[in-house]
Image (cartoon, rainbow, N blue to C red):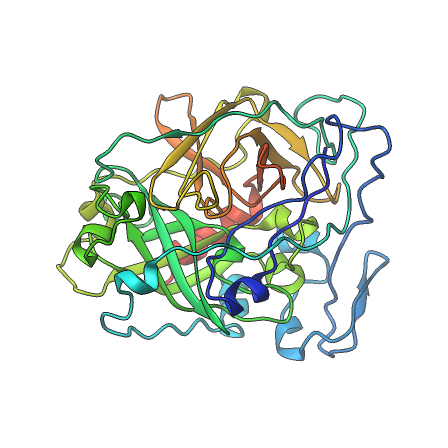
Length: 399
C-alpha cells in the first residue's frame, strides 16, 4: 500500500481553500517490498492533565488541554462499552456552538479553490500476509484504480450534498450524505460525513458556520466556471448544524496525516433549514439511507460518491466510483481495519458516502471517504462498527 497522508488543514484554510483529503502517492508497484510496517498502536490518556499519559503501554504526547482529555475512557476498548449517558457526558464537555448567521453562505463563499500541498507521510502501512477478509490489522496491496463517472442530473432525489464550514483563516468544504434517523423514521435531519470535516482534531475544536447543502449545483448552473445564484447552488436550502458527534479518537488524536485516527474518521450532524419550511431534511430531499454497521467485508460491493474539486474535477459535479469489493488498510491492528477501493476522485470528495446493497435489497451507507493516495488511485474510509453505532444512537436520541 502506498504511503498515505492528508492535506494540511491549517494551510488550506489560511489560503481560503477547501478542506479535502489527499495522500502520498505510489512510488512503485502496489505493496512494494521495501514498505515499512505500520506504526505502533496509537492511543490516548485518561489523564486530566496536559502533560500526556499512558494507555496500553503507549505514551500520549504532551500538550493536550485538560478539557480535551476529561471524561475519556481508560482505554479505547472501554469506549465500546459506553452507553447513551456516557456519550452525553462526553458531549457536555465538548460543546458544539454553531449559531445561524442568516444568509452567511452566498455563492462567493461557496466558491471552490485549490487545496494546499499535502504534508509528508508519517508512516507507510505494509502489505500483510493474506488472511480472511474479516481479519483486522491487515493491509492489502492497493486495488486497481477506478475512473469516477458523473452522477446523472438532477440531484434532487440524491441523498448527497456538500458541507461548508469556517475555521481560523478561511473556509472549507466536504461531501456528505443524508442518513436515516432511527428515532425519527421518514423525518430525518441527520447528515453523515468525515470527522475531519467537522472538527480540527488533536488540540482543536469544532468548525464554525457548519452547514449542509443537499443537491448542490443540481441544475449544473455553476458548472464550467460559470457563476450561479444561491437558488441554483442550494435548490433545497442551506441547512445549519445544531448538533455534531464524532469519535473521541479523532478529537484527541486527529491530525494532518493519514494514521490510526483515520480509522475512526466519521461524524454525524443534526441540521435544520435556516429558512424553516416545516419539513425535515429527509422529506425535503426525498431520500435518506440507513447506515449498515458491521457490514460483512467479504460480501460488500462498494460505490463511493462525492464532489471532487482538484483537476480534472472542479467541485461542481457529483461523481461516483464503483469500487467493487474493498481491500483493507490498517495503521493500528487494535482498531477496525479501513476499507479501500480504487478511485481517482480527488480532494473535495472527503466525507462523501460509500454505499452497498444490503441483503434486503436496500442501499445503505457503509463508510465515508477519509484518505487517499496522492496519485489519486485509491480512497480509504473507516469501517463502521460499535463506536460509530453508538455515536449515531446518541445523536438520534438527543433532543
